[in-house]
Image (tube, rainbow over all chains, first blue to last red; front, top):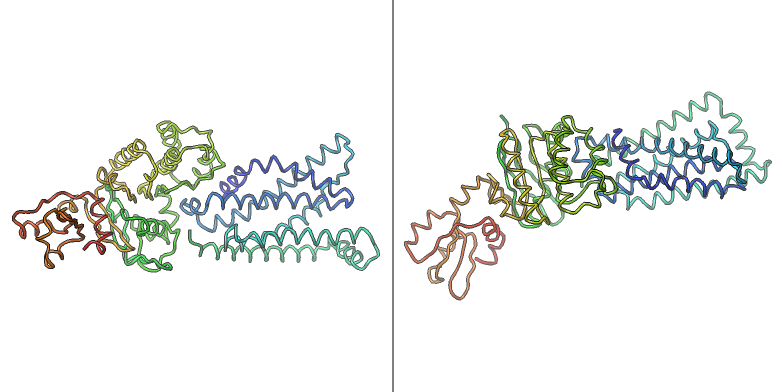
Length: 219
Length: 288
């Protein structure tokens, strides 16, 4: 399994080079919005790397190779899910390093530190995104799954783009109050445990579905 | 000891094409050539053996084990060479090896490095920068570096120049010196098999036409030439296929001993090549 994740990293060396550019673009375009630049940068880079990994597999018709190696299809599917978490960790490190460099050099660009809530939020968003996308990817392959992927990514940014300015603009709006209530309770153990269990269940269901689809695929 | 590869009553249906009751057996210590025209079902059969396609019926046993129930164990002991490059083109030879090697229980780094040297494969070169022949050699180096007992090769020689093809055949001959190993090798370049195969399995339109020792084929089949006048309905039925022209005919017969009894003289009997056999079986309807 580790080898497949290593492969996902090795095949996209170029993405790693451009990762810094992607994050820089998001930091600059989120100057007016503020702290949401942290999850936006991390999620965007995680998303890009996940998509590239899937695209490279498709380009190289990797299913033929992977399924002729002594690997179970469960390993191929599990590695794809796990590599998302590795990409997320890489994206966090990238953001921290870039934000650190900007701060140290005192560049006229605002950056925000990464909080535990940011990481939890990114983890949750990435799990939701991949849990919806991967079963489709394993069922129909990369090319045919691009529409779902497009809707997911832009949907996430569209909803984010609509909500965040609302929250920032009018702190007395119903939406802002509701969000404050939600976040003021966020460290309640029950809520965390509940969210954690729901996320894990969602992820597990997605993995089982992906595995079922992939086991039935022919190459 | 169980045969190294055993296929019994294998069935697979697609829209417009079906594999119908495919059966053949390969014992250890032999090279089996799997021949047939394009679209006959060679790659489909190999994909079914590798469980890349799901069979609709029948049995596939590799090393005496069911190919689906014991898939991982079997693939650990198989070296698979594809008809085209399926390695990650963005990776270098060394990086690709780094990803693949730990997946095999018996990976032999020493053997891999020896093959890299032998094939003049530069470890730091990206796979996309290798020529078609070099890609095939890399594929072969991977297949030969984990002590595989069975080599399964899908059209490995197609598109290769005669020098590389000859090198490949030499390697296969040396592999088979170990009598515990076997090679199953699909091709439509039958001249390669004339040189190295012990057994020939011929598939056409999803059916096995024959699967037997190569020597038996040349013992039984014959290419016959003669005047058209001797061809009557009862004679024609002994032929697999006949080509006729203004001067006479040429045809393939399944039993040349029978032919000797029928014609005392007036005909010429030649040893057919595997190409001749494939050609007559494939085109028999048009020509008879």
